[in-house]
Length: 236
Image 1 (spheres, rainbow, N blue to C red):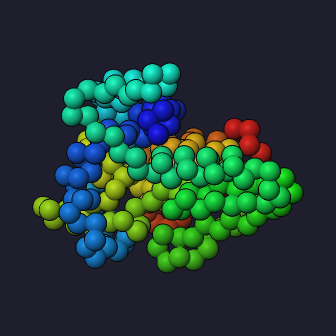
Image 2 (cartoon, one colour):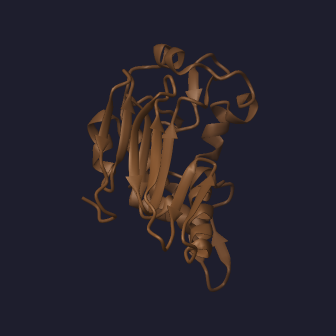
């Protein structure tokens, strides 16, 4: 997990930062997750001006060391690691390795989907709108992974009355309102898809498309969306 988390941080230049445990708890995730969810439209009405996210200046994830040979992880005292979406993708990839010889397989790891198989079966992958669950697009693919990051299903009011969700801007440590509300990213692995979807959302409308090098779909505040149809597993 730690290796996967550090790889995701490096891939995204620190936009996907596994060291924000204290910040997400301060935003109310631990105490308020079971509360009634704040509807997406209401959260957007209450949200601050939209600003793209950025890496934290400290980039504390760079201080973590993994020694697979010794079986050790070295981290600064008090630095916590958030497994978050990376673990979902990691388990999907591990299971895909175990199932690869089957004619067809699909693994749904809490929303991260890894699929493939020796028979080369085409699978429809539906992407729903975060506003009304209508189907925005259906991808048809043989193998790979999809991951979706969004603020529509896990939004709440924080302890001081501000709208909040679980996707943080590492620069501020606060829930990010960037103008992008949901991103579905396609990639060869679920860990990569998870990292790309989150980085795209945090980058805002101007930067989201650049992270969808394998294809995907980004949904914006006004319900419009940007579609990049995958044509291969080679990045564009």
